[in-house]
Length: 226
Length: 396
Image 1 (cartoon, rainbow over the protein chains, first blue to last red):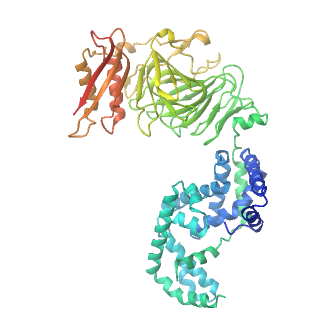
Image 2 (cartoon, chains in turn cyan, brown; image 1 turned 135 degrees about the vertical axis):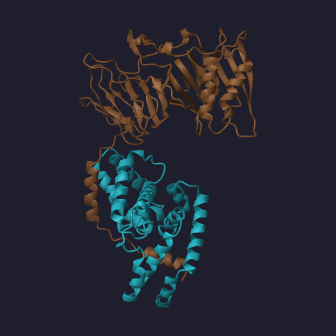
């Protein structure tokens, strides 16, 4: 995963690109295993350490799976409560981060289902309301954010399973093999879902009028890129 | 603008999280969470003693059912705790009775000392199950709702199960060293299942069990065994089942509830009626020495309420009665055929029965099989027949 906290990114880099340091992997793993074992027995300090290692990844995943919803903090909190409750179930058969992602995906899906059954009040703004704000936001970052909002709105149109694997792979950079573990589906199924997710998104993009309005600024940005 | 461009934009987008707020709320909740229960092995490694001492925990057969806990009868109190999910049910040495506990799927039970008693009261038509596990036993709750399914990892479990109108009320799985699983499925009975490695013994003092591979869904299709029976098998090989119906070979039933203390009565009352039908299993008291207990039925007029059965004395009658069980179930225009192999007792009643192919006339196989089991074990008395008899069944 590319966007970890600096310290974690450094550790990840050591592990992945420095096989000359053979103890790097076991050291990190054993340290985490020890934390997991302690946390599973109720050691809150160990759990806090695990939480701080993984919270950024979880928050980003939750944010992307919820398409930028304001509920991210609540859901992240719920994910880690579930992790705490279920730590005793973690058998070490997958990476701890994979297992945490699995918990996070399940919590997000539950949250989305619960949200669907909640009544929508008239004063609530539709989710993609910010798209129309681009006319009053002149800077490029605002344009980019506007494109992201459109993209999130398109993602919302995908079926749940396709959206999940798309976010995990395309946005989180997780391999199909690991996604298969996270979503509990065969790798081939994951690849199929990815293929159709991309195809559907491209079709949606072609018919999305809000993207046409953003193409001009996007082209300018591309030209200015070194 | 391509999809990859939008993906690149989206990857730059990150949440703005108020971590202090999340941390505060999260750890406030964590502090309120029950402390996770360590596994018994882990606890042993660290010297923490995980003990079940003569306490009785009632097990919820329905997911949300309240679990009752009987106080210890031995004078040794124990604190029982049931973890939520795939944890270990542990009882520590905290003094005091436990008012209630609930087991869930995945809970592991180690009986370190004496005998643990469990109980699932009858609720919403779900069977009442009382069971006990002696010292040294280890069980895993495979399914907490009806049917209650336990996996016997070592030791033994003894259960008293009231009959259910349809399907199986209770089952014990034994996983062999080769990974094969044998299921002893119970419709209503008193049985004891024990294992010593791959060697499995089943002592059946009442009722009928089906011994076979666990089904993906529905009832267990296997060898039907009726009481009294002492069954031995190798868990790796279902064809190794050997049944001895001699009463002397069957281990006497032991109590599945703790002995009531002088100042307290056992709360459990087994339901006598299911769907307004009188069942053969009744509330019982157990008297005698603990090692050699005897089941004594209460003196009621239940027997007089039950009409004497009309026996089926010919193979044709048996075939017709069983065909009637599946008649409503078989698909219109199709025919279901099977052979029923019966091993008869000296008096012509059935000691053991087996369908080949399995008796699955239609989608509602549970009720058809229960009906067939009732016919076979309660109404068959083949005159002039002994030993093995094969009855062809055809259902149109």
